[in-house]
Image (cartoon, rainbow, N blue to C red; front, side, top):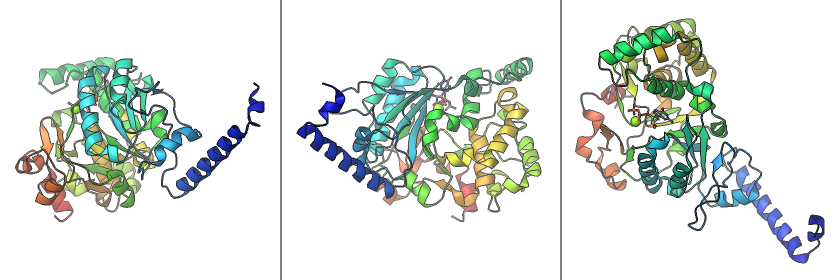
Length: 389
Ligand SMILES: Nc1nc2c(ncn2[C@@H]2O[C@H](COP(=O)(O)OP(=O)(O)O)[C@@H](O)[C@H]2O)c(=O)[nH]1
Ligand SMILES: [Mg+2]
């Protein structure tokens, strides 16, 4: 039968009317939702079955009504995604982390997950992750030009830097892939095609552990309070990895004072009003942040400036100090948030809520008397004095 003929069948007509009603209802729902786009949900697991396919470098359109029906029941309040950069070999750690974050938070919200990798994800990786996620899940291979060093990097100089750092026993000192990863996390993850749909992300690393129930939506918190950066752990950077970072930052802000917030958190990262860097940074293996901040004019100019100095390869600049300095200077104190109620562990540090009430309500598995917050390596006391706590 020709497709046009089917429309005259009474059953098909009522199905079409139903379809239109659902469509109109969904459009109305969208009008009250802060979400601009809801990504395709074709990888969502239904009825306990393994999904027929995964989204692989696809999935931007919002026109698929069938998919949106599945999102309708979820409580998506912010335009946000969970984000994991992972190697295929990280799979065992990745699934454990995904499972715990789903159980502790996301099964009540069904935010999407985006997985990024410099290599194509294996079918095994996609299959093992996809049975655990409560919302849509997407896998994407990173563009090569976003991962590998730019052509103009002087390899002789870079190699010499790596050799010396290794000789000095600096962790990851001799690693090129670690440098690729740090540069990618500093300036490229938010430019990946799949992430263009989203404003907020929660960075999650394979192997990280979440100790408490999140009885709230941190993305909605970020949105409602106009925050750009959220953290759980703050500590000191290894100076040897960032020897010329601060002088580069200083030159940038001298050239671009217009980007520095009047409410800057300079006193958190410097003990002498910007003369030198005190090495404090937010530990970026946990981040809940606003990608529009990274995409904005201040950070774009800042990253380009840092990139042009070659420090990601000649030294070993981490994305943690780079993000932290930018959030502190261009975002400012009011726009940074300490998520004290999120119990978080990334070896070797654990942030555990120390307030009895938070710890109890979160049903936390960590020991509140052993939180990293008050250890000698923590910078949290500086943050506390800055915000008057
Ligand atoms: N795809 C990919 N991910 C990487 C690579 N190197 C590190 N990562 C990821 O980058 C993040 C940080 O790496 P990790 O080894 O945990 O560094 P550490 O936390 O600083 O010790 C993790 O999410 C890793 O899975 C790489 O070469 N390829
Ligand atoms: Mg890690």
